[in-house]
Length: 274
Image (cartoon, rainbow, N blue to C red; front, top):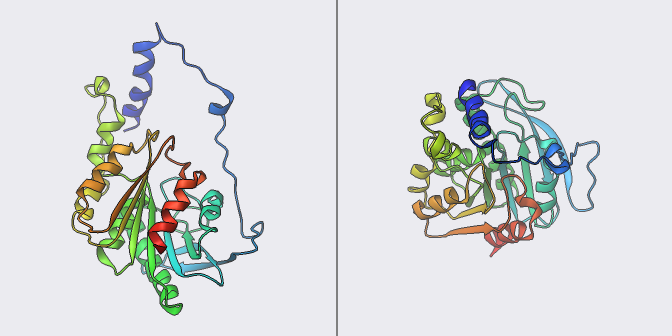
């Protein structure tokens, strides 16, 4: 797998270096993330509670629950592969404008959560977190929504397919793994690059799941996303059998910056409360 990725990076340079100058600017050299911790968090609206939730196989998940007195819904968030709660400030700020109790967590092996990540393991994490969020929502007589970003879109559809939720959100979603890897490699390089994908990963397919889920669905994607292209969001929208589905395309949005756009919070607010 790693040699294929090396080729993927090297071949474009070999093919085009004779006639192309690759510019690396200061903004390309830094990948900064505004962080937040329970100790540094401060809000006049939200109260942050930090605790552990134990999964059925004995893993301790580190979770943050943001509650507010005027909340009208509870939302459970499934982050992408690189998601850590300490990097979630833009997401928290986007949701702070809505009357929502927000539940975040770090997958097993991420952050302060114990264990090692596997496909079955993170699905077990998702099930445990659904149980926690569902109990919170029922205590408050709230509807429960789930929201998955990138890799987390598989978990959002996984729970929506199995459990009673009021609706689900897929942000910068993956349609299905085999098609995704093909899109990552330009057609010119496909004869040279092969992906050896574990069968548990390759079996993840959002297209199949959304075709049978009838619950309300919001899909959000950015036009400049080069990791999960907007065509994947469009494909999922077309495949969805939900009678109440919405696709929001954010012009100029990339894979990880959608919470910075006004359309992001506006579309979620409308989906949850209108």
